[in-house]
Length: 637
Image (tube, rainbow, N blue to C red; front, side, top):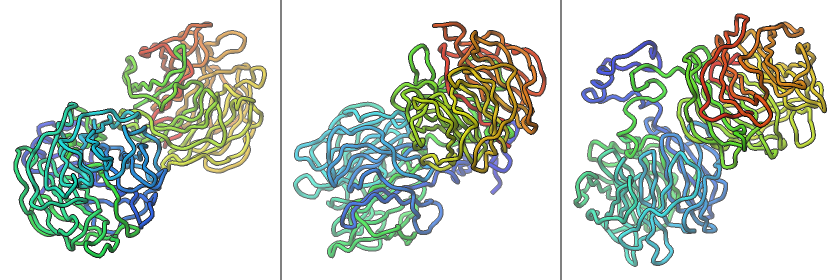
């Protein structure tokens, strides 16, 4: 069958919405199918609790591979999340109330999300629609509360209603659809076949829905956009199915290969997958993964194996039935008008800037499209505490901030394609503020800064892999309040403060490690400068050298030497944000125009020419010292 929508091989130009809509409504294929198949299996017991996280691609049978580790070994818990995040909710060994999460796009260890309402194991049931996730209480006697979080906002769970009765051991896995959370089976003093549901979109208590065909606890759950599939249990091979849109009892759908329980299920909306558990009777731990079509009644078949045999694990995916109704077009390819969102070194056009002072330290993240003049719009928020004097870096897909006021050693990130709050990436070698660095599409560098004393150290990390930074080398002197930018091969550090302002410019080769080499000098000593670059030219703008500066200098990146005059900013200022370019146009954002006066001004220049800056638009909030970068700057080729 031919495709009526653009895919990753031909997504250019303007596409007709009616063609995309026809494909979705009549032909039944979905552009996102290749990207929303990631499932994660978390924790469990071997019989001791483990930190293991495995991952599979649901559309391709095969064995699971390692994803990373939980921050604490836990067993039975609930998983939640949306298109980008998998959230692991509480658990036992010992009982914990911590919420931790990972991002589906990047293998690695979990980061802290917040806390659940209570400390319990044997949670289960619930659902997610990509905006909000809900799950049920565990085995504390008499506890009926339901917890909820907003998926894209780090924080503690809130009370969202109550179960109809205290039940533990409800079906583990993905449940419900984009409006209904489902809770099936479990134990309320004896095993039950009860199904109950609640509305995900509003707080309130559960309602009775119907009955499963058998009464068991510790069953497996998977879901499509319209149905729930509950399999196994202590003494059962049955897969039950019930339709989420209308109350009623479940019917028999098929069977799993053996009588087993205490595993977990997941889906991509079209294929259901059950993994792990133990046999009943006998209690033999399982590493078996089985799968079945959600559209055709029948038995499960072999899919592959987990990395180890375990029970009491949990799971989630980035394309289960609770997300399907909201994901009919791949968001990285389509805007609401059918025009592709441009991402990548040669076509990227988005600048993201976050943190700064306004006048107190801020956690706000804003964004602009570089080719279109206008004001900034909100993107999300940085982690937890407000930040200023923060370093930034960017690949074609990922925006990163490091360090900041404190100083602190946190590295955090967002994805250019998806608005939302920042997530934890790792840590710097040391607490640092007022540092600077640059990145190519593979590696990010950060050099100098205050710890609180001035340092000359340079560290680096890999953009695509969550983790801590490593030692790179040293700058030619210890300084902070400088700027860095460059090409895909060179990182150039310019200006700064060593106890007084300096005109120092030095550089390193980004792909290697080692100490910096002298490049040349600025036109005058200056600290708190801004800067941006194409692949051939570096601009250094503004700053403070006794008084606030409006000067823009430039360098040819491939040739060492001193600065040449480029032009002037529209207003003299210091602590401006830059590093925002689409290789043609560079933007200098915000800053300090006089003591006590932050500005909303955003200027732009054409990098390949010379001349004075022109007005681009305004920040939503007057801010200085933000960390900003774009997804098509000079380091990306």
